[in-house]
Image 1 (cartoon, rainbow, N blue to C red):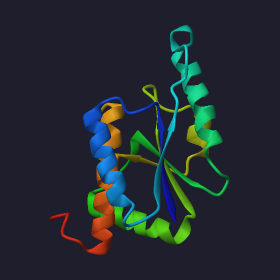
Image 2 (image 1 turned 180 degrees about the vertical axis):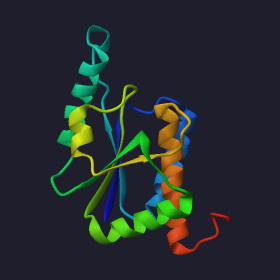
Image 3 (image 1 turned 30 degrees about the vertical axis):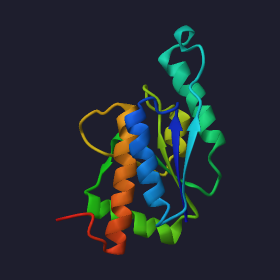
Length: 156
């Protein structure tokens, strides 16, 4: 199973970039993993939030194949504990060819993206910047990989 993380806009903070790069490399030891960055929509000052979500949604959906399992990182999604998330990932390995996670833009996702999504996951009830969510998500994916392998990274 290939796992892909789709992002809207590049990661700005060099500190977040360093952490994301570190976890991306670590994840690569456990599974095929790739991050795809979709450029920010241009001239957003002249469009509404809804129009921006629609434009981003079109760009996201162009990256999705019909057989992909698409999971939105969304504040209204299901919250897993790390061990539960690892079990969920393990189940997806048996059923998905490509598991695609999407972290949207500042205003969330368009209706079309929500309709196409197979599932939604929330990292917390708290709100984090989209830049920070990227780092937190990659760390959690790495943690899930180590839990699946029974390695001593995660402590309970």
